[in-house]
Length: 273
Length: 273
Image (cartoon, rainbow over all chains, first blue to last red; front, side):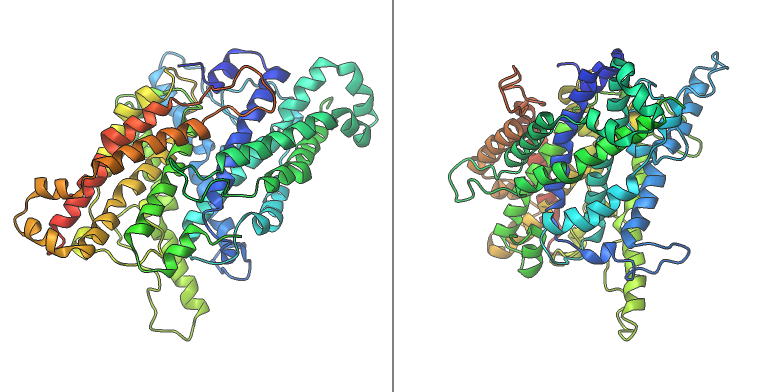
């Protein structure tokens, strides 16, 4: 079989092209996860702060579930375990105490694959806008994506939400890699603006309207193709789509691409620290 | 928006048609999850019993991760919490101690949605062939589905494996519902065979070759459509598919449909207990 995305990334130095390819592949993951979430209705008690009163925890039922899933699935935990295992297995490599290393304060499963080249500038690497993503997801996206209603399937719904949030978060935080490669390609363009802390000018430098227009059209096409009802014979479902493709296009226009650029600007502002 | 699948299920008495619709929708979930798994190479140390040596745990790294994810995400845990919350919220309904109830011994997240009508015959409801599904997944499916190699992305790979296993397990254990509705529609056909413990005759009664042929063709078509590279303009990736569609068709032919029927037969054999 062909080389996988992650293999090809691990073999090469990071380039704008490799980051771009990853962003395109991540569109599929985002669209899949949204289609899967739309199987369930809104199930709003999940997100309702006044609904849940969990001892020792202040937040919604969904936040509670996520905080536990994140803790458990987190690469941090796994990394520690793998480190231990690898150190045991590679007994003769006593100095390699941290073959795999992650920042401790970022939910592990929102991170890029661990073998992604360590190319980020350390002061910029910790940027995290998950709280904004969370808010927009629950309050802006869900109301238009899914049907109103409550079928009580909170566990499945929360799992599905988590998939969407992870996919969106990963995509948006990839802005760090986008910013890093763009900076490396033309430091002379960025350095004066960074020194002047000119966010607006940086934002302008990072914006390519024709590219954004193309991304919007592509994700809409993906939603249409991946969300279609597939039947062998004509059965009246032709053309039906499990989600409205224009919602995905609007999602990208209104906040996936803008937030990615927010991450890029934040990253660049600390790039010379 | 249109009524969601789970809403329509919760409103009606279970029928062969509603079970069939659910099985068809689950095909999409299975295909999506396989496409996502194929982003990563085999990463065989994950499944290697001799690789991991985890104190107090006998099994592979993947089994360890799954056992923890299942514990954490399990509907059982959530259900208990929801029960508590609902009991608090509905303080006046003191008698409803278990508004939601699940068998304790089945991993929660492999269960059908909780609002699925409680229609299963209790002695048959606990059938569980997850160990067979696990074995076939790791040893038969993965070797043909994904590229050889090890990129070290064990956490992401395991999460992706878990999605595949849950989707496959749910689909196969839906055989219980299939068996129940078939039994109800024609008890006179099934009862003599059940009393005679005639597994072969039951299997024959449950087998419709032309339907199976159609399912195989449909999942292959879904893999082709959902796995395609989508581009706005011709870029040489047309016709490329992220997974080989014939693998999905073969997966259904060789073990998804046969194992579903194994569940159906097992279910029926205990249907008169």
